[in-house]
Length: 212
Ligand code: NVA
Image (cartoon, rainbow, N blue to C red; front, side):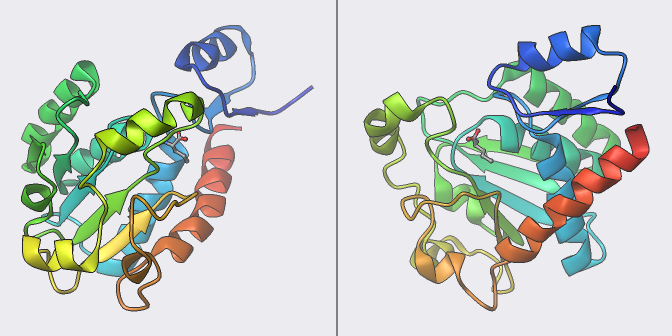
């Protein structure tokens, strides 16, 4: 009865079960592990802004889950260097980032993981973050806010870290002020968050057109 299923779920197992039993294509519209449509929209946003993407430096400052798992994979495929700053108590997914490291070898890009935001931000052309409290983690809010102390992206942090003066800022939304200050999020010169949000529509349409 349907040409495709677009599913937003908590556990990645739910996507796998849908894909196993559904004769129609299943598109992952976010799970705890992946967010592929966001990556398509993000890469479209980066390509539209910079034209040539190979060799750009993308810095991620925040949590290590669905959004960055796919974004790092997409960047590594296209030759965009990725630097990740996550708190000490946050581990990146070994399998996913092992795969990202393999992809960087093929594309000639680099992957760096640090616990220090300023290290990841040095020379960044693209600065990206996400909420610190993902869907399903609401009960861990107080603990996560503590864990991410010092990870808020501010103009001062970007300046003192040596981020490119022409950096762009991106965020998958919804945004909370704790992860990024207003002057960065709403910066007319630097922020691409609203074109990025608009590209989500085109990313979803493209995936449906391709698969369904
Ligand atoms: N990491 C976030 C992404 C929201 C689009 C979450 O899973 O809630």
